[in-house]
Image (cartoon, rainbow, N blue to C red; front, side, top):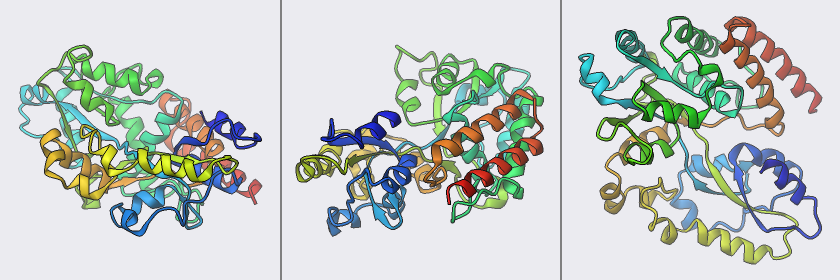
Length: 347
């Protein structure tokens, strides 16, 4: 989709007007002049009903270029029957407790599975792990900081989980759908994944853990002091700058993201604060407070004009860490050096 949007932005006329964008594509597309600014097209009453972090997720240089549409956040999914069988009454509230539970569960079943194949899912997971340790991969100015203590601890913890057999042996070839299927089969206790797992847990067409699957905030280390620490994977809707019908396109975009339309989809996490607080949503989704907690403490993936290239660097070095062909410190040092060089080429 990314390549198609890049190509469409160069066509005259545009082959389509409204495009779905990952939040991490916005800086590059905006810098290229391929998106229509929404700065004067989002009314004040709409802005007031959106979390500032949602507007910021789709902004570049202070200007919004897309409207949030799908609010994906990673949550901690767990098998409550496994926890009960091991003597645990509740999911972990801290990363330290999570690690302790995994060690206790190891003799019964594989504790954990996640998306650590070489791909974007691996980067998302590492952003989330760094957040759990209180860190970010890049600073506010877009400079890489992979050799800071929280990021180093996250890398070491990832390797520790593998070395202590707390994850499935094939985790280096596991993507997000694979991780979900393993969790839904009942063969693992924990996974962190996006919102789609929640609906699948209760669907007998996909799930063998009906009544056992549950969801919780992603636990940070105790010293972070927040109820959750996770990562966002938002999708938005944007209008191509070369659209022949920009006003109509904006009207359609605003309709698709409107409270009226989202109120008909209460199994999803709405973008509007008024809907997030509505009794109807809480009746439709008994776990909405868990998702809202994760949303409130979700870190974005890095906001970079060359994100796709930076992500490829991170994917390669993180996968070396997962496969054991590089130590955590070596992987982080290698990625840091490449990212610094990439940043220098961008100026």
